[in-house]
Length: 139
Image 1: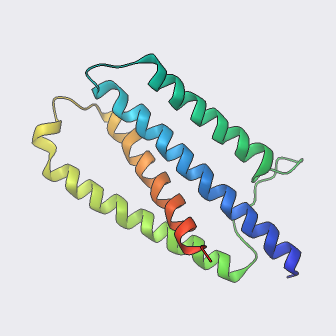
Image 2: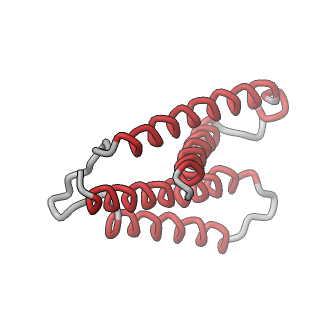
């Protein structure tokens, strides 16, 4: 692999990490929004704007080419290792959060719906993946 290809893949990985973080924050806002006592339209608007902004940033500058073909793996072995470790972090974070939610389930059962919990888990997985990639690829 040439240095240019490696730089391109590093940039692509950085875009994926930031996209995951923005997506995670947006999903976290959406999952917590119904539980707030005093909901506000600006909070929902900020969440929707963050989602659309991160999505368009990803589409325009990130993983899609002009042929709309998405690359699922990295050619560089070091970047593949970072990606694999990030997925392991996601699984561990999901297991720990599911255990914590199980321990607190008596208090949450009346206030939280299944869709809120699913959105919360997706938000958590996206945040962990993005933070893990950024943490591992720092210089």
